[in-house]
Length: 180
Image (cartoon, rainbow, N blue to C red; front, side):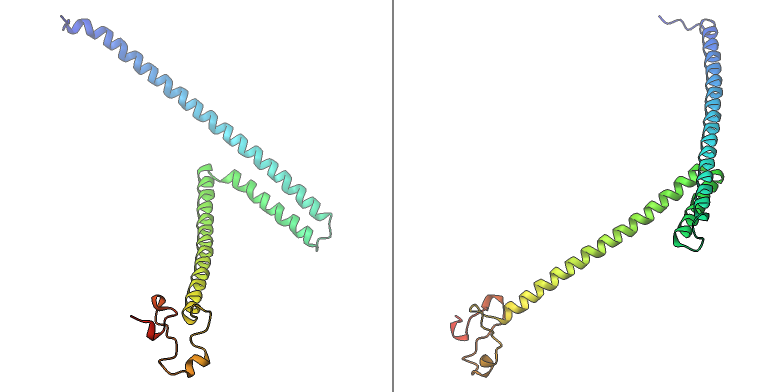
């Protein structure tokens, strides 16, 4: 039989509850310190990459200044330096979630553009194929089994009973006299 005495459960359950509460508090503190450490690491990593990007931009600007400033190569170096410098600025100022969202939206936009281009190309191919099929059908209607043109000037000058008629694919090449 189970002991229903509240005094026998009370000390052990209160001890268990206090241990659980202490463990939860320690886990929360540990999670907070890990989160803070991760933020510091991320900030250090971002600032390190930003410093390297700024150094690269300075090197590009220096290389561009050693070339004729009016040349297209110098302009290319300047544009590259501006792009790298912009990247460094965004690394220092942008929240990583915003950067990921920006990249994701850009990828989705490019994927939609690609899908439209592929669809347009497939529709052009289908249209060309359909045009060829229609042209073949029209040419098939205009010729009989011997390859003679049913609408040739000689056939048009014949009397209606002598001219070959073509009224549909089932009657292709048949004369009025051969109908049942």
